Image (cartoon, rainbow, N blue to C red; front, side, top):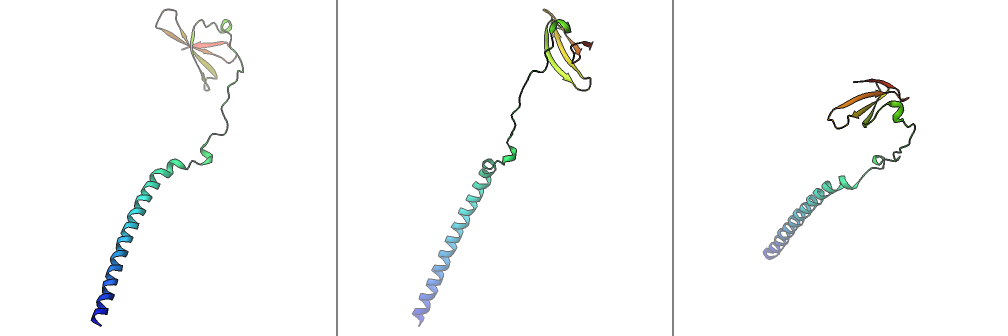
Length: 113
């Protein structure tokens, strides 16, 4: 009888030790897998809504003629919605100075700044 008790307790102890080892191994692998997924998945899943659906297009609406504006060397162009006018940087010949000229959408000079 004593021999049977030893066998049973030995098997219980061995089973308990094996279960603890397998459980620890499983938890370790699960934590490593979770870490890898947490680092990789944000870069894999890109929602459809984040993609740009309509490509930008450029078209010419109106051309401003140089003889009408009186600009000889325009170097830069920007539109000011507040002034409803184009801001044109005019570079002087062989000089480091530049003038800022306001031009209306109809190619008339509005002033310089």
